[in-house]
Image 1 (cartoon, rainbow, N blue to C red):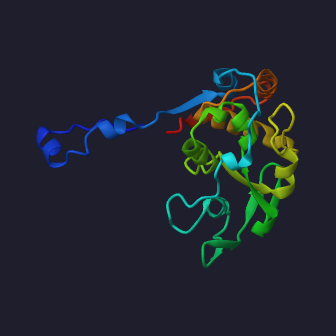
Image 2 (spheres, rainbow, N blue to C red):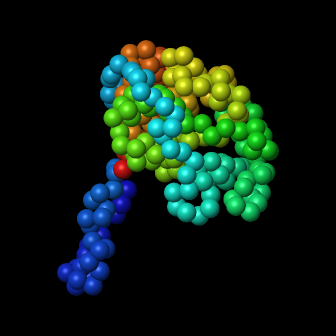
Image 3 (tube, helix red, strand yellow):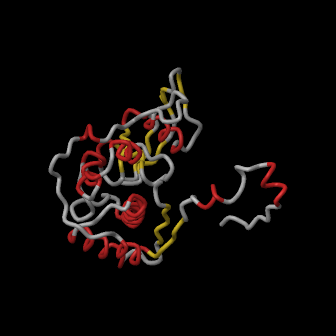
Length: 218
């Protein structure tokens, strides 16, 4: 939480942009028990009408540091100092794919998974978003659970399914997966249909004191 700062009139005059208004626009972080967080998901039927993967421009270099989103995730999630060649090409490191409990040292065996798949996001209200917001969703580096490096095999098994139809093959990963799924949907105000909500509710029963931490997307 931010501490309260007393600002004198003189300081406001000297630093007109350092006052409270900027902080007032900060999104508040939320933390809730998983079962409660599931109930906060907006309810809606899903529709994939009009969906194209190209509707979500992804793997961009948003901060223009020569590293696109895939590389940024690989660098952030490597358990050791990654090996990076010219042009921000990640060629080595160590990654743990929590979906299936596999550790890899070569990035070629990894996919960067949109935890809530692009097609699922489209179904759940992203079809109404602007192209810019869909791009922001597809390259969301501001919430570490939105994108995750996992084995290509597990990602392709998951495809565009929600938790009613797919859950990680590693049983110990399912509570983490459920909390990250709900956090991502709440962050972006994405809806859930009845089957998805039922599956998440059932998962929450067996997930003890798991909490969902999220911050609303800009």
